[in-house]
Image 1 (cartoon, rainbow, N blue to C red):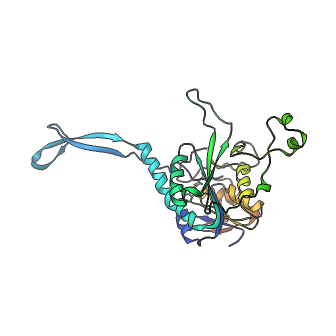
Image 2: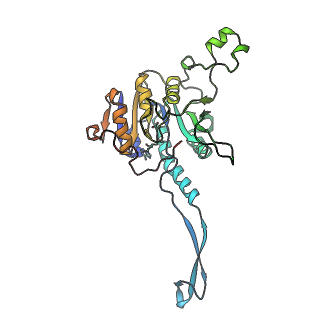
Image 3: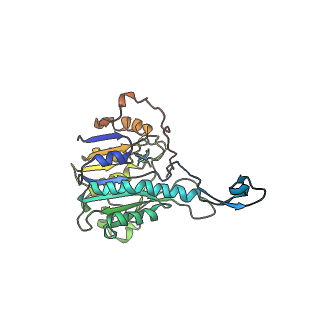
Length: 299
Ligand SMILES: C[S@@+](CC[C@H](N)C(=O)[O-])C[C@H]1O[C@@H](n2cnc3c(N)ncnc32)[C@H](O)[C@@H]1O
């Protein structure tokens, strides 16, 4: 394995082929909406002389729609998709390894219950709130301006938490804490303020769900060490790969969308990755950033 390995394909297949207890840190950000918004409609037939169906002994029946559960079905799909992949991630983590699962407010509670079942409740260490301030503000409810990142450690009292690597933040009222403390700043809490990837910034790749390097770098610095192996099975534009390589870690990235591989081939060329199932030479410069079968939710 080289410093950076990038796989094209369904992450479940790739994860299954990786060895047990080989990964130090997983940060991943699965797409909530699988794009298969199924409309599961429950039907019931009742006796009706004018019905459209003919049954035993020529009796006629009408078909009634009892209910439709499009949203619930889409959600069930998400958890069913995620569960075997999370179980593989747990298998791949070393005893002192951690998982950071990036979610949003609609799915976080269901995923917390799922992860409690897979890792055990005591492995839950923190829920990090990434708070940002961008986009429209509805007038009908509080504008939702945060994402949720769940941290699970395989071994609840043995994990990487490099306190000295935490970037300190300014006090809200520096005048009240004295010059020395004010100059040093304070430790951030589990609420992290960070702008979204700036529209015109150098960091922006054009990939719709790209997460800010600032968030991912903090996780990499604090929860892994140089030389460690990191994994993102829903890699998208490769934010974890960039943070990992720039901070001297190794990484495995997986995505099943050719557009993501295309973006990564440009973004991560500096790290000369080893490609699996994909030829970066075939990538079209600037092509099809939104291509692929998925409809991704901008977060
Ligand atoms: C929300 S995006 C990740 C964005 C990423 N964190 C970034 O900063 O760019 C989720 C990614 O998961 C990928 N994906 C979805 N299902 C997958 C699967 N079964 N196997 C591999 N990748 C998958 C999608 O193509 C998409 O690029």
